[in-house]
Structure formats: C-alpha cells, structure tokens
Image 1 (cartoon, one colour):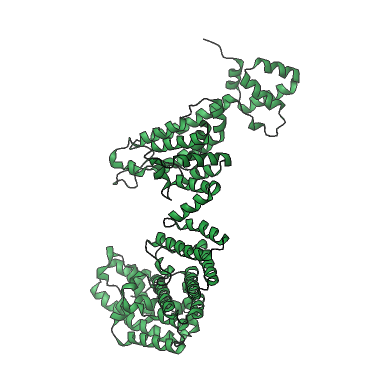
Image 2: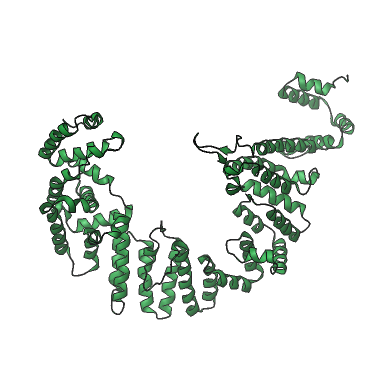
Amino acid sequence: MKSKTIGYRLMEAMTKDQIAHMLDAIFDLWGSRKIDDLLHKLNKDVATTLSRLVFSQTSSPEEIISDDKYREEWEQLWDEWKELIYEVGDEEGRYAEQEHHWEAPYFDGYSLAVDLDKVAEKILLILDKIYKLGIEDDNLFEEELSTIEYHINEYPEWMGADEEGCYLNRAVTQCVLKWEWLASKSAATFVERMIEIEKGLNLIGLDRNTFTDFFDSLPEDDKKQVYEHITSNRTNSIWEEKLNSSSSRWHQIYHSFSEIFNPDTYLDTCRALLHENWHYGLPLIDDLLKKNNHSEAEKVYEQIIVSYAGQKSREDWQPETCLLISLLMYSYGSADDTVIKLLQDWIQVADKLNMASKADLLKLQLVTYQNPYHWDAVTKVFQEINHHPFSSTAAKLISQWQQFVLTIDLGNSFRNDNESDDCWIRWLMETGLDEGKNEKWFAKKIKTWLESFCRNSSIQFRKQQKCISLLTRDICDIYGLKKRHHNLYKIVSMCTSGYKGSVVSRQAWLKKMHADQFILLIIECWKQNVVKLLPDPSHAHKSVYKEHALWLAVVKEQNPSAYQKVIDKWKIDHKRRKNLWKAIRESNLAV
C-alpha cells in the first residue's frame, strides 16, 4: 500500500486555518529565490496560480483561482443540479405536490424552476472560464434541457405534468443563452442553435424577458448579423410562424432590430400589427408628428385607443358613443400613464385641425379615464363642453360615467335593478351636472325616498338596503356619529365598500348639500325597519349565530322596546339553540 504524502497527511492532521498559518510562515521565511525553485517543481496550473498569488499587484487575491479549483467547483455545482433532476419524475418525490391528502399529487414545475435557478446563479459566475477550459461538450445545456423533459414525461399521465410543464427562470435561461453563444461561431449560428433547441422542447420554456434582453445586450455588429440572417430566412415556414405574431419573442427581437437597421420595415410592421397590440401605434405617432402630418396622426390616435380598449375588454370602442372608462369597467384598475399622454396629445392635434367637437369629446374621455372618482374634475369638464351641438353626445357619455360610479359604489347587482339606478347617488351627481337641480331639489328627493320607508312595509327597505346603508355610513363619517350609533355603523360598513377616491367625492358633495338635515329621518327609517332585517335563527348555517347577534345589537341600539320583544319571542321559539344564546351573551346583550 502506497504511503500518503506529507501534503495529504497535513490536510488530515490540521485545520484549514492551521495550514494557512503554516504556509504564511514558510513564505515569510523563504526569499524570492526559494519561491522560484518551488515554482519549477510544481505542475503548470499550480505554478501559474501560485505565481499570480505571490507576485500579483491585485488587492483581491481571492479572484485568483486555479483551473483545477474551477473544475472542482464546477463538478460540485453539477452534483447539486443533478440531485434536483433526480427528483423529477418520481410521483412521491420533491416536485410531486399534494395540497390535501385526499387530492391527487401534481407536478410542481414552479418549484423546480426556482431550485434550478439557485444553482444556475452560481454556475453563471464561472461559466465563461469553464467553457475556455474545454471540459464540456458544446451541446451541454441542450442535453440537460432534454434530460429534464425526459424526467417530466416519467410522471404518470394522471398527474398532468404534460400540461403543467416548467418555465425556467432568469439564471437558467442566461446559462443556456450564454453557453450557446460561446459555442457558436457567429451570431447567425447562435440563432439557428436556439431555434433547434426550441424545436426539441415541448414541456420546458425559457424566460421570455431574459431571452429578449440577451439579444438586446448584443453588440451592434452582432445584432445586424441576427437581423440579416432572419431577414434572409423570413419566408421559410418556421420563421413566418415566429414573426407573424406580436406575441412571439422572435418577432419582438426582429422588430426591435428593424427599428435600428430598417426603419421603414419597422413602421410597416407597426401598422400591420397595431390591432394586436396598441403599443405598436406609438412609433407611428412619433413618425407622423415629426413629419407634421397631423391629419394622419389623428386617425392613428383613434386606432391606438380602439386597440387598447379591445385588448382590455374584447369589445369595440367608438369615442362618440362609448366612454372608455365604461368599456373598461371590469379591467380598469388604474389609468395607464401612456394612455393618458396619448389622449392629451390627441386633444392638441384635434385642436390644430380645428376639430373642436372632437377635442371636447376627448377632454371628457380623458378626465373620466384619468380621474373617474374625482367628481369635481369630471363635472367641471362636462360643464365646459356641454354646449350645442355636442350636448346630446356629452349627456350620453356623462350618463355612462354615472353608471360607472354607481357600479363602483353599489356593485354589479344594481345594474339589474332599475329602482337602484334611480337612487340618491345619481341624484347627488345630478346636482353638479344639471343647473336646474340644486340643494333644494336634492333634499326633496331624499326626504320623499326616506319617508316612503317609514310609511310602507319593510320589503322596499330590504330591497334598497345597500343604498340606505351607504348613505348611513357616509352621514356617520361626515358628522361624527360612529360612537353614537356604533352597532349600526358597524353593520352598514360591512355591507358597503368602494374606492377611496369615490368615497371622498361622494361625502364632500353630501356635505355641500347639508346632509345633516337627513340624520333624524335616516335613523327613524332604521328604527322602524331594523327588526325586519333580523336573520331567522332557524336558517343559521352550522349553528353559527354571530350575524344574528350583530343584528340584534343594532335592534337594541336603535329600537330598545322592539329588542325586548324579539328576546321574549326567541326565548320561546329558539330556547334550545344554545349557540344562539351563547353568541348573544358574548355580544354583551342582556337576555
């Protein structure tokens, strides 16, 4: 048996720190002549690394690493990678997710992508060096991707792995692209290598943004080679399919390079695909405005917004008949800054073309899109443009804005209820939109409405409960009635919602109408009707009575005498419902 060398024996006998301390002492004792002698006895890789460490002027010696050290680290990283891949395909493995024990497991491609990316982050740091060492085949990552697909296909069909797939993240995608770039003799070769890799993948996808960003980062000469290669092959069936859709990443790359190397083709593509993606209209606008072609620019502005509205709502939009914000009801979220700028610029162009009515119409489109919950801003624009011959169109569009606000404040259910449509919120908006409808008119409408709840049965009150709850909540907020009517405020807050901006505008307008004059009448409505709103304990779901106790607290607060009658009746009808009486006592209600 061969005896161990002193080097290996030192590694076994000492810690890393002790060996480092010993080496530091040796180099301190030796002069440069001894070090030269040492270098001649070492192999080339070790000698080169040691020479750089000892004689280098760099302040970061940790950046100097031997080739063998790189190889060792590379092998360790691929061991980590393969350990993850080993788990793929096992229905009881790491990537077989099962949310509940009674449900079938499924392939968790997201977790696999995340785990692989953690390893790839470290691979990226040494990938250039490893490629230069020539220790791996050029098709390394192509084979690895095929291996992952093979293992995914090993899952049983019932797990649905072929539908889930795996979309790889940033670092893995960078590794694939960088390796393929290093392995390619030209930019054109790189493109074809990537096409071949894509053709072989059915379940795996590379990260889209990382993919396009890589091409954008190429030097201009390489970009030109890519552009010319695709141009010369664009009539091939493979490239036709990849370039004819705005959703294709190859189209996105080619289109971006067209802007640099062939602006006319770039603009032609923008015109052809504007209907698919409204962003394609932006370069067209820039080009037309540079040429002072305002007439054509005006047409393109409309095409852009039509495309934007269609992609958001899948419906057609016409500026004269449809308010943009109304069409975007369920996909609005918040205004897009680019769309705001487009509408603003469109107004300026319409003015330059003496299209006064069009400019007015667009001002209303803009303010309702940009500030739909800012009642003052919307009504100010409406009042400015509400003149003949635009009056009928303006009235139609402003009615759509009112419908939008009502939907936001009352929810979608009101749209099927004609009575809810003609409610106090619309009356309140009318006071700012119609000169003939002032505070006195509004007060009359509200009082008549509230008095009807005091005269008639509670059926109508229940039907319009959301409307009166919203009014009650607003009144309590404005005039500080939350403490005095604590339980009532709690219950009306639970069944009302709305965007903050809309709440602010609505309450500000109510204050202008001196809505405190309605407080007593509103409370009287609740006093007379609240008992009828009490949920029946007989219909409680799974013996849960929290809602019953909450409503009972409102009854006690607003109509104490009626409260006692309810308690007396429930003691007879529901005396065996222990959970009901427990819920009532927990709400600190006397029984």
